[in-house]
Image (cartoon, rainbow, N blue to C red; front, top):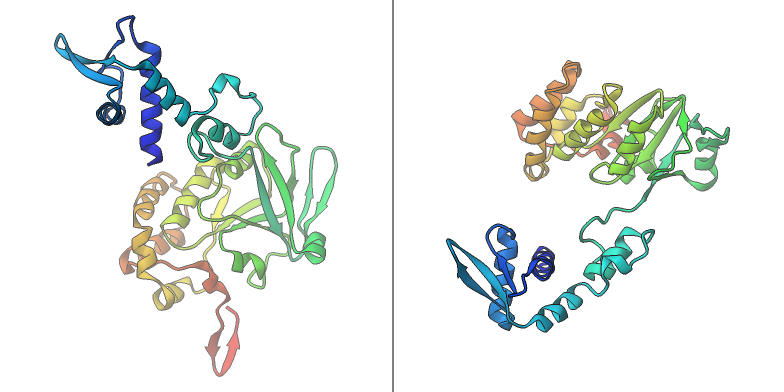
Length: 308
């Protein structure tokens, strides 16, 4: 529905701007297929415009300009020129489209939530220090604000792990790295996070611990394209046995388009470890995906439950 509304608003705006003194606008050359469809529907419901033959093609004739003006005002309460240039993107979208999530709707900043068991010391260009492990002990987590056009230069001499599920973020007993910061994201890696990582070295090493599914592989491809080869895709101990025992076919099927696209992109990176490709090929062979919360499962070994 939002796409139809956007197409109609764009078509009516274009129609008004480009109409001749006779109210005629060439149809085929100036409007997309979606816009033409919405104009035809609008014409049938209001009679405000009509389609006419013009030479070898066709054109639109505006019959009731006031109806078109009223509809444009309804779809876009405020014209872009009347909105402050520093207004937030989503506020602009509401003013212009009555919907915060149309057009360019990303936020100007992203908050990277992080935790650490030990180490986790971050410094910026101004000499300020953030002790992430202390913040984790006292308040549960720390946060960095990543803002478009503003980079205080935060970095760490340890490892930055990125995990996509909260359970793995909440409990760090799986993490053996003694000087690590663990950042949390959901679903697809945010573009602002990727841009921030690309802009300057942020850590001695970056490790992506994603679900073993199409989305996880797509995120690995995206971060490799942004940062380069200094990114590791972490393979948990005994990943093959866990995939075969706990792998999920539904998750595999649901993320298969991402898997296929990511696999093609990842082939461009020729230095990826052989074990990583073993994982990819095994997922493909078995038709299984593995959610990475499995790293915390308790396995029975000789009558004793142990963490992997």
